[in-house]
Length: 572
Image 1 (cartoon, rainbow, N blue to C red):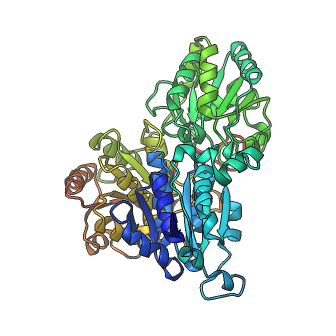
Image 2: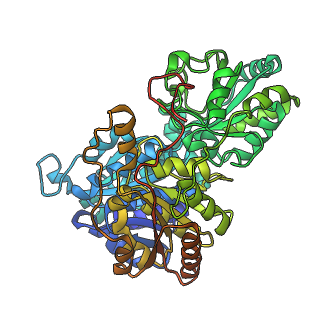
Image 3: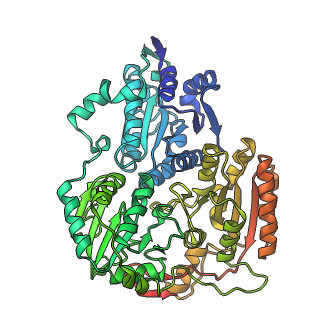
């Protein structure tokens, strides 16, 4: 059947099971939006306040549902406004397909109005980019883009379509998703094996057997649960493996939910703001098994001395990560779920009680001094956990509040925590929370942020209100750019400069200006009342903003300085 490129795009989205997209229209993508109008009963479009908000919303939707997120934008500034969201998805291995439209083919390379080489700009921060110049190739390219986004190590893909292609006609034939891998460009690509993005590496059985032997010889084993466990939804297999080898488990920032936060084997986060239990275990173990972990500079602070007494084993789907940051003694290439399934068939149950007793003699969570009438970060998070449903989804921005959330809110399942881990984008949280709420309408979604971060994404309150996607925003407000100030205090001799944010807006009035409600709180009792009000507003489809006043000098503890040994705590 002959169709315009815009209509072919709509049909391809339906092939992929897409029923929700996020975006912002403009001149070059108008043919797509005109067709989307005709498909509005099958594909819901969410208009955000800014393209960056759309990119984070699509990402939050993908992370929380396990589906591929979809984001649309026009050319030029519309496309470049997506780059922070694309980089965030890339660093955290989140499957999102970004679809942009460029100027007409005859204007490409001529500096036309709102022309930009978005495929070139985003090439380093995507798994793959496409510039579509021919309507006849559009369907296969879209199918390929979705396959690459979700396959292997997930990640973002960008498809840029020149405007005339969206108006030109070509033959289109419906092809169910299960047949995509055996048809067209995608089948040819798989046959030629041009990209590992489409191949799921098979674990080598000899590599698995070697690790089984290493486990048998170990007296003090330790596990690191990384983002790969969460992305592959391998949490059940991971938890069984941890129990079989009876090892303490530390999490990375992206590994939260891979093991339940309150699990008796969980030691908390590892690294720069890791718990004493996690960091001391890493320093004392004789076998360290990292699953789906990049060994980033925030985990392996000083590679030369990291886990210096241990044999290090790395399990990862991406061969490029092996020996990139840390030299390993052994590795297994494969998906976390598949490798763990193989290990669980072979590994007997062990008892390492003496080793665990040593590890858990150190605290897994920071204890804060509590001052009457002043909220501490732990009190805020404990109150949220106590008063909200246990399966509440939490989206954070980036900074002190992000670290406090990981340390003190105990995540139970993959996709419960949404945070910008690798890229550290301060404006991530509210957009991601909206995407998560629209993808999980029956769950409570909390957006935990700081006063600095909230200024970067508060424009999306209007999106939240318009689409009745109620999010409870909790601002940890110390009137400072808290994490930057913490570095100034601890490593820059307290030269505080440009980190004070004692200025507007009043966040409660801002919420009200967007048709929502809110409250400013200073005590646990006031916070409990505000959360109850927020939960009631949620039932009416309305979000709520809670402005929590905390001490300006509150620190994230513990902290180990970058480039130093993992047990050299700068603050306890």
